[in-house]
Length: 368
Image (cartoon, rainbow, N blue to C red; front, side, top):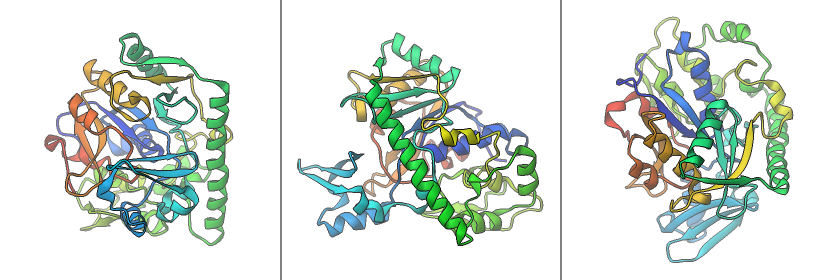
């Protein structure tokens, strides 16, 4: 399999589905090869929007997406802060026409398989909520604070309750959507109970055509780029919306199906008891902020990434920036430069194939 050619270690910043794909790559090295992702920084995510649908939706409100300075999703609304100082606000119930269908089957709000999870919900304005889930994540959080990159304070119980309520809401509503899809024979494989032995048996003969039938065609593709990254033949293409096959799969190759976060997830990868835990497993939860960092919700994610690069915790990081020639179209970049991280600060709210940049590590940036 073609991997990053220099062998660098990488920090991945991503939504829950990105984090799940990274966890699968880490769990099956005997199939997928060694993963360069050494640290997973997960983001809170209720839903993602189609860039083209969002652009058209705004146009119907006489707003050009190029005139938007910042998007926010909070307090049950989608907010678009315009460059002229005006603010456009619309209930999420109305904005859901822009939501990507795969988000409706996701039951993870707080990136439960990450090392650190970061989001705004539950903390005061100007602060972020940070959840340390692994010893690696807790060590990074503590060191970033001790070296002055961030400051933390205990989470208010009311904030934790709010966060748990939103996480439970996503689990409950999307579980109902999963049942609805399954009732009309549209498979939602990743939520099925299966162990590692069963997983290997189920996927042993599954190739891209199976991935297309089981994930892409039924509206479960998260556009993460994992299939593109692990393909040893370089015959999977992601030009804009959906993965496509541009050749013939070699016999017995099932790497794309194994890596996809929306095919089967064994209980060894995603413990089913997490369905009963609104925030998943964690070691510590705090409110945090970073003085002097121009980022969203206290700049904490940006500050932690700066710490990771400064301390050489990993060699590079994957972040999502905006395309220069297509306003608010997200674009993943692989970088070792703090300035690139600062430039990419802020949530884009649209899907980006983050794993694509790992394939061409030398270029640092890949444009579809």
